[in-house]
Structure formats: C-alpha cells, structure tokens
Image (spheres, rainbow, N blue to C red):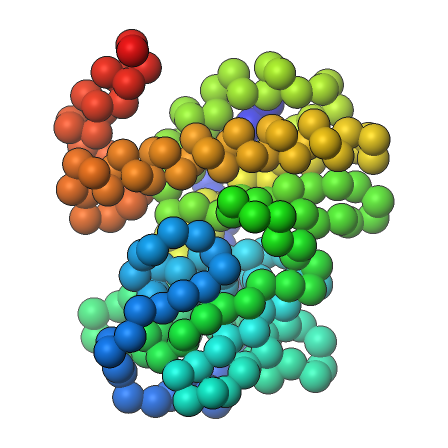
Length: 228
C-alpha cells in the first residue's frame, strides 16, 4: 500500500544561513554528485537537501569549487543545519534570488543515510528497516507508477510518499517491520527506483521543462509503453 497525503505538509523555517554558499555564481563546470543521473546543479541540491532535511540523523557534506567542505547536519559540530540549507535552496529557485548551487561540485550523503546505489538509501530507525528514494516527479505520478508493485512484497512491507512541496521533491519510503525481510525490501526499493528513473527519462525525452510536469505527449508514450 502506497500512502499519498491529501495535503502534503511543509516545514516552516526559522534558521537563516549566515555563511557558506555566498560566492559569485559560476557555471563553468559540470557538477558530479552521488545522487544519480546528470541534471541541473540546483535539482541535485534539491534532492540531497530534501533527504537531509527529512531523515533524522542524516548528514550532507557540500564540496565547493573552492575546496571547502560544508557539513550539513543537526549535531552541534555541523556548519549548517538542515532547515537552514533547505531555506537557502528554496530561495535559489526564485527568480529574484541568485542561484549559487553551481558552486557546489559534489554532495556526499551519509550519517543515517546509507547509500545502496541506484538512488536507494537505507535507513534504520528504532530497529525498523527503511529504504528512501527521492525524485523530482510529482507525488501523484509516483503513486501511479507504483500501483501493484507492493503485490509482490511481503505483508510486512509498507510504502508512503513524503512530498516536500517547496523543494519540489517527492520521497518514497518503503518500510518493513521484519528485520529478516532486508533482501526483499532491497528488491522492492530497486524496482521502484527503476520505475521512477524510467519515468524521469520518459518525461525528459518528450521535452518537458519540469521533471514533474505532465503532458499529452508523455501520456501517449507511457500508454504505448504499457501496451507493448
């Protein structure tokens, strides 16, 4: 069962970013991060920020083009807290604000998030296994893609969507209460990530300007793919 909240909630931010990411904009290089496929620097930062903000104990390390390493986490030793980074990344997407995301060469995701590859992250909370996937697709698109996917999973499996509307990111969380179901959980998460990746490629192929947008062309191609 995939739960989609009828009215996705967002977190109000009260923490300004007093330092870091304040250098002039420079798009002279290609950003490379562990998240996944080539995309715009801001989109990569949106995905990482959403995960770092949503998962307790997560830690991001931003590697800048000046050789700086900025630690983003909730612990006192961090340079920036996740709420502050989220506020800044949201501002980067506004027309009246400068977008400094191109200054971040790489984002390392760690802490409570264990990168399993393919866009899937393992989280262990209170003995409960979770797999997290972040995408720029809209929640209803992700829910539609995953219809019937959990039929192959054990009864202990449960999936839910956690949209961050202001960042434009949808996170899928697949959970199992049975610690012995780790392999099945990985398999289901990998299948879900593959479906999401294919949809992102499809929408890019039909020339959509926003990854989460829908169009008649995308719907037509999707239907043809399903009928094949």
